[in-house]
Image (cartoon, rainbow, N blue to C red; front, side):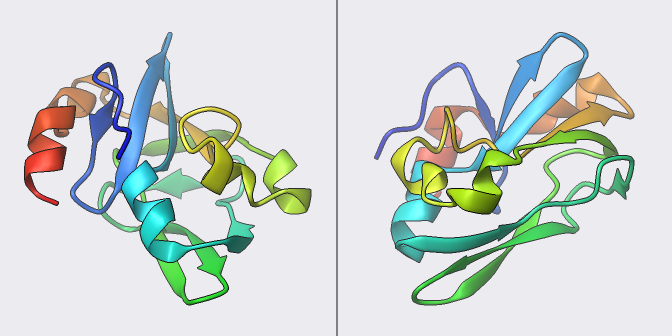
Length: 124
């Protein structure tokens, strides 16, 4: 599995990349591999508030549907509209084109409470 060292991870299989005062999030390579071929991604609405560990969206595959949990609390400022037509970006590039949404965190320090890649991998 590919889990970049420069990202932070939630136990619920979401990843976070800090970009200025925002965090970009998606699901991990492990999660997309377990789900199989994705057919639909439900993103949160821009402007909505998300709460850490609570459901923020859904990914559906040919096998099952799974919740996407918010890794940190904050306001959704952007969603990846490309996923509407190409949800398979999450399978092909979970840490690149397959990002799901961006959050303006209520507290950027919450990102540091997430797992490192080695902590995440040890829990798999």
